[in-house]
Every structure is written in structure tokens, then in C-alpha cells.
Amino acid sequence: MTAATWSARALGTEVVVAVTPGSDLDAARRAAMAEIDAIDDACSRFRADAELCGLNARAGETVKVGALLYHAIATSCAVAARTSGAVDPTVGAAVVALGYDRDFAEVVSLKQTDACTGPPEPGWERDRGDQAPTASGRAPGWRCITLCEEDRSVKVPRGVVLDLDATAKALAADRAATAAAAAGVEGVLVSIGGDIATAGASPAGGWIVGIAVDSSSAASDVQATVSVTSGGLASSSTEIRSWRNGGRRVHHIVDPATGKVAPWRWQLVSVAAASCVDANAASTAAIVWGTRAPGRLERLGLPARLVAADGTVTTVGGWPAETTEERGRRS
Image 1 (cartoon, rainbow, N blue to C red):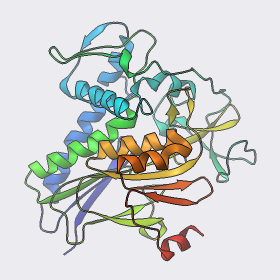
Image 2 (cartoon, rainbow, N blue to C red; image 1 turned 45 degrees about the horizontal axis):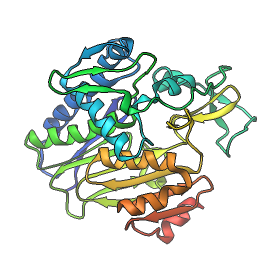
Image 3 (cartoon, rainbow, N blue to C red; image 1 turned 30 degrees about the horizontal axis):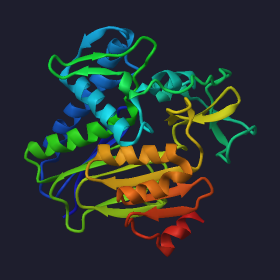
């Protein structure tokens, strides 16, 4: 018997729920989607009715927030601390300055163009229009956020915009997988745009996961496949959420130290860790770290696969070496 799967669109990307043979897929789906919808209600930067938007609108005030938003902000601050600020929730103003000021489907429009001042890129470009990218400078940093666990309050200084995109999706995957397992499912995998969390038992041989720049790629188009038996797996890319803004190409991962897009050194970084949040923190930080990423990931002891802008693959931390077949897929 094979694992049963269900998929849908949520959080602006594809969500996949898979369960071990004989498990109740519908129960897993309901439990997982309840968590994913709750994260969207609490943490979306683009929905006027989302709790995070209300908090950002009250910057400078001490605001009591819901348990889930508080947990998401605290998680983002913990990730910022672990990555020495490479992944930081206070980059919101910088992301907006680059043109990512609404849901990504609305940010971009496909446009054929020959002009390109950035790295090699596909002929179809996502174009934000004529708005010039404006560097907002160094992000204020997570230490400027005041968190009070006792009354679950948050204070963000005036002018600071929180953006939880770097961690909220991974947190949703972890919570969704845990909730599905608690609903009585023997084993479950939840993927949200390629950010993967597992809970409970895994199928014989593990969950077989394809690695690709686009998480929705067909099985025949993935760059590599790995077996996941527990924990989380996340991939960060500079290729999918990218657009042209003011005549140059930008992407959605901001270097908090500069307020500009992170370097184009890596087109795709995939990391395995104990949770999806931990994996996503490392894969996103690796994009920001640029050439320093392999050494830092190695020191962290995390299995990782890094694909350079020219297609060269580097693996560290025990990630399986690239096979001849996988090399052939990239050629």
C-alpha cells in the first residue's frame, strides 16, 4: 500500500498532506488545515483582518495579542538569535521597499522581456512595474521587540514592520503535522510550499521527497530525491519569489544587515533538521550567508544541499552525495 495524499492551495502556495497506509487522510487534512488557517489568520502581512496587520498598525504601543501570534513572534525572535540576525522578523519595511507589499500573486505579473541586469534568468520575468527598489538600510533587529509572556503583550517601536514570512510557514507545517498525528493518524507528512514537517511513524523506507526550485515540480523534474524518516526539511530559493523592480531583478529574502536582497550566490538551499522551523531557519540563513554558508552549516551539523547560481551542487553535514542520475537531470 502507498501513502494517501491530499493537496490544496493555502498561504499563497501548495499544501500537501500525506498519511501512512491505512491512516485516516480526512482526519489528517482537517487537523492540518485548522492549524494552517489559524496561522494565516494570525500572521499574514497581507490580510487587513490578520492579527499581525493590526499589531503593525499599532507600532509604538504595547499590544496584547493572541497565543498563536505571540508564539509565532517569539519563535521568529528565537530564530533570529540562533542565526545571529541573518533571519530577522524586523525586515518588514525593507521587504515592502523592494515591492513585496501584498500577496505574491498580486506583486508579480508575467512579462516577456530581453532586458536583464541581474544573474541569468528565464525569459519570462515577473515585473513589479516601474517602482524603483529603495534600500531601507539595516533592519532594526529582533532585540527591539518587547515581549511579555506573563500578559502575552508585544511592543514594536514606531516605524518597525514585522514580517513573519521567514518562519510562520515552517511553524505552520510543524503545528499541522503535530495536530494531524494527535487526531489519530499513525504517520503524517505536511508540506507547505516545500517546507516539510513529519510526525508519527514514517512509511517503510521513509517519506520520499523531491528537491526542486519549484516545490510543485512533477516527480520527473526534481533535481534530487531524499528519504525523510522524522523531523523537518526545508528549501529556500532566490528563483521562485523574484520579480523585476525599478529595472533590476530582486527576490524575497532580505539581508537584515543591509536591507537589500541577499546575495545571488545560491539559487536553492535545502536543509534537514529536527523540525521544519529549524530547517527553514538554516536554509534561509544560508541564502543570506552567501559564500560562508557551507562552513556554517557544516559546523551546525545539519545535512544540507546547496545549489549555486551556476548550478554547481555542494553537500555538507552528511547530505547524500549527488548521484549520476541527479547530475544528469541538471545537465
